[in-house]
Image 1 (cartoon, one colour):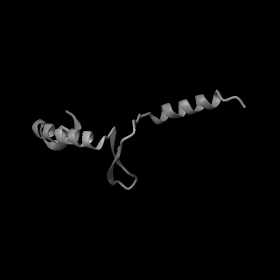
Image 2 (spheres, rainbow, N blue to C red):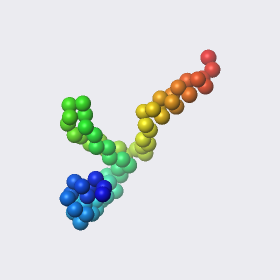
Image 3 (cartoon, rainbow, N blue to C red):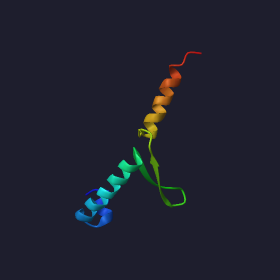
Image 4 (cartoon, one colour):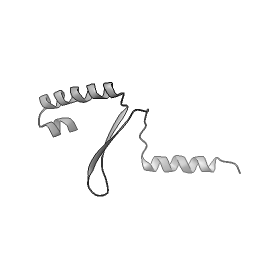
Length: 73
């Protein structure tokens, strides 16, 4: 079961909600929507129009360390 279906309570309502979200994404030229909980426990969302990529923090740190080791002084 996906998150929309869980939040909506059933698959039919989730499909209707997803149609509206899909329409909004196309109209606003959105590439990614992130829903998160901040350090105070508040839920928030951020949307992006630029192409985005998700990288795990561990992978990011490994890439960073690898790039630093490849730099010649």
